[in-house]
Image (tube, rainbow, N blue to C red; front, side, top):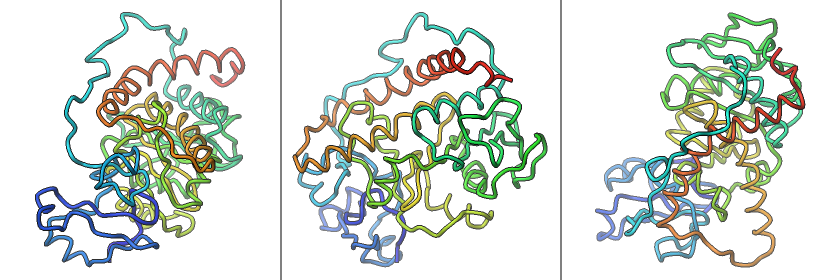
Length: 333
């Protein structure tokens, strides 16, 4: 049986290639515990792929008939008149700088405090790793310090087997959540994990947030829910199993646990993590009204997503760092 990974909450469908739709095999029901009602051989024979990256298109469950019953999933049919966005459409000629040159360790320390101020944290929990280009080591926060008190000199360096090779502190055994994603994903240069409150509401409900505001479009096609909670990831084997289930997704909701956000740069990962808890809080607040929300037209989503990530990541990070340095200049020490 195919178990444990879902791009949509609890009930839904595994999406088969469009070529099989005529045979009536396009949608295969998933039962209430996340198990597909077919074995892997049948799925393979039908041409289907159980992959988070192929079906995590998020919008309204009611925008087209083939979304019926899939909360937060979107049709994979191509959309005509898709609007473009990002730097290809408009790029700023100049942007406000941070105002000071930062080392990688200083960028990491700023990231911890920025996300703590944004609410993407839970007291002593959470870890961020950064595998810089050309390095076979990871920068990571130490065990025992809260995110809002970390300074640059506290940042540790570990090898890919989680051994501390530089730094004055120990690191969490849960770092294997990170090491195995870094091994498998060249795009995942930065891996952020913590338990922000509104994300944990969704994680406890076993569902992905419905993305109803334009900022949420930056997670379109990038989300996966892993509903099975197996306890602490404290070994390479457990980290490898989790990484395999994550696949190519860059935003992961862990049932009864928290979230993982990956990014190709520290700026992108920080921006996407900072906005995630608000997206979950908004989705929950809309959900409890019991009203049917307005939805974002499918054809505008890719362009908005590109504009947010390509134009917004560096600008968000620079602005957040400037404000942080005015309040807490000691973060650079």
